[in-house]
Image 1 (cartoon, rainbow, N blue to C red):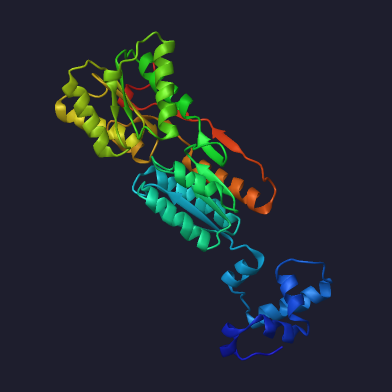
Image 2 (image 1 turned 120 degrees about the vertical axis):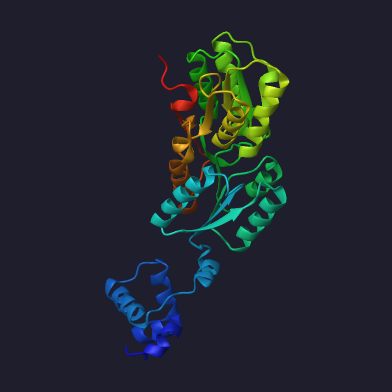
Length: 342
C-alpha cells in the first residue's frame, strides 16, 4: 500500500478501499462503527487509513450520520465577567468528549438570538446550550421545536426544556440574611432585568429574608439595573437622591454591586461602616476589588461542565427525558459587608 507523499492530503475513501482490498461500504461501516466486522478486516482498513493519512470530511460525515461533533453555545453578553467562566467550563467539558463549541454572543437582543439559532441549525450542530436575555420567550419556543437537544443555562424559561441553574431564591435569601445578621435593617435591592427568572428568584429570596426576620419590605428601596457596572452606579445614586435611609445593599450581580460601591464612595459614604454591600456571582474581580466583595458564589465553571454532560447524554440517547439540575450556591463573606458575623 504505497502512495506518493504529495497525494496523501487528497486521499479518499475510495483510495482506502482500494488499498485495503475491500468495498467502500465496508470502509464506511468500520469508520462509523457500524455493523460487526472481523478484527483482521478492521486492522487492514485502519492500516490503510493510517498510511494514506485519510481524514473524512467532517461536514460530509455530518450529512451522512447526522452528527457533527459540535455544540452551539448562545450567551447574552461576553463582556460580563460571569460568562467567560461559563464558556470555559463548557469548552473544557466538550473537549474531553471530543466536541467542538461554536460560541454565539447576542448582546441580549432577541433578533440576534433567533439569527444564531437558525445559524446553528444550518451548521447541523448536535445540540444547543442557551442562556437567554430579558426577552427570550419566543426564541425558547423556537428552540423547543428543534429536533436536536437543547439545554438552558443559568435561567429558566418555561418548563419544556432541560436546564442547569443555581438555586437563586436561596442565594438571594443568604445574601440578605447575612446583611441582617450584620445588624442592617434598611436593606436596598438593586435588581437586574425584571423579566429574567434568575432575577425574580433572587428578589423573592430577598423578600423572604426580610419577612423571616420581621423587617417590612419597602418598594422605595428597590431600584432597577441591567447587570452592568453603570446601572449599579446609577441605582445607588437614585437611592441616595431619594432621601430614603438605607444601611445595606444587595445587588443582583457583582458588577452592579461594585458600581454601587463606587458611587457610595464618591458620595462620601463608607462601605461597609455606613452601608454594607453584597453581590451575586463571585466573578474573579470580586476578591481583589477594594473593599473585597461579599457575594453569593455560583459555581459557574461546574455549571458549564454539567450542561455539557446533560446535553451529551441527550445526544447519545442515554437520557432523553426533561431534566433540571439545580446547583446550591455559596455565600462568600469579604470586606464589603464587614466580614464574618460576630
